[in-house]
Length: 233
Image 1 (tube, one colour):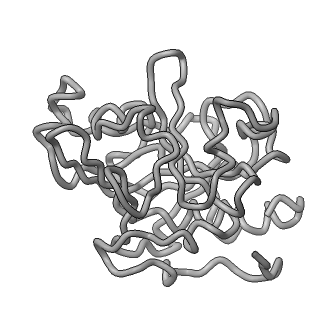
Image 2 (cartoon, helix red, strand yellow):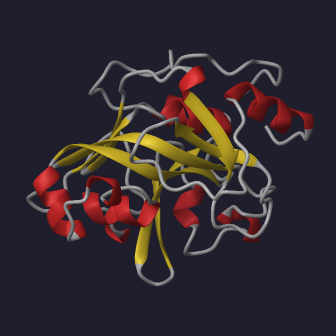
């Protein structure tokens, strides 16, 4: 895929399909930071077991590929991360701390190894199942973190490698989020490339995870300029 390195991020997610339609592989076959920003407002749907849950994506992080020291592909392709190197629009699901699942959407061309981590969502459907799985009814604690949302939606390693446009786990078009409603910060919980502005969130949404106090917000345009200046786009 050829990308114009001087192309600007769209102000609105014009590339998304209409609401409730699955996002095609071409949506994910773009620069990872752009896909991350454009996933805000999209809908994740999981049909695990007898439950059907849906939630709106309100926080994501971009992991750019083998040149990103915090991306799993920086160590090369392994059995654990093989689906990270799959075609765009593939689910990459892995476990952290031996107990929590995290779900990612693979981006760019097959074999590259980049993805967007879904960090927080706002529940839309299947609230009873979400509360039961999480063991709480506190709205702010249901899905405000990558491990929490996977538990709430029933996402496990069984879905690693699944296509995101069909089957039990899908990403669907949703209402657009304007650039002025998006904030960008460094990523959370990493030890390398800690200053890269690759965490995108819907400003003011109560389901977003807590931002470390020392973090500084920037705009979508400022994040894009920072990445381009360092040839990270």
